[in-house]
Amino acid sequence: MRIISGTNKGKKLYAPEGKSVRPTGDKIKEAIFNIIGSIDEESTVLELFAGSGSIGIEFLARGAKHCTFVDISRKSLNYVKKNLELCNFSDKAKIISSDYEKAIINLSKDNEKFDYIFADPPYELNISNKILNKIVEYGILKSDGLLIIESDKSEKVIDNEV
Image 1 (cartoon, rainbow, N blue to C red):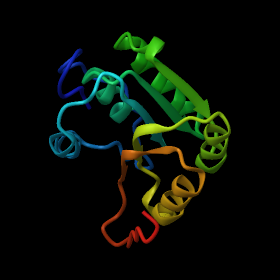
Image 2 (image 1 turned 180 degrees about the horizontal axis):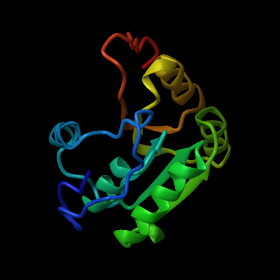
Image 3 (image 1 turned 90 degrees about the vertical axis):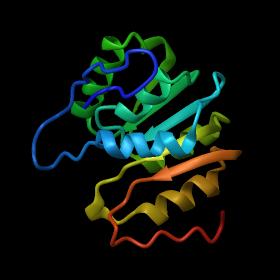
């Protein structure tokens, strides 16, 4: 796993190993950022289920102003912290140890809104619609923002409210 573009291009990131881990691959990252295009320097990003933080770090490498990383696993957040330090992005990041629902509620209470939200929950949970609805309910995505949820192809994601 590496940074694809921007500052630190080509730098290899730390990532947990094992069958229970499913980091977003380079091909998927490339496809996502090809669709998004250039990143505004004032952009703020939220990465839910951050894992190693590779997506948020890719946003920072491409010029985003700030990224908030959320994960319930302290082990994952240690990887996020190591990767932020490796890339000298610690000052552009906030790390939250929490489940996604509590994090969304607390970010809303703090009046935080994001230009980009990326969520990559464990596929077996089938919670993409629940995540979508929480984000809409608590209004943490800017009106012109972009929400990306990575899900299993068998999961049906319905955006009736958006």
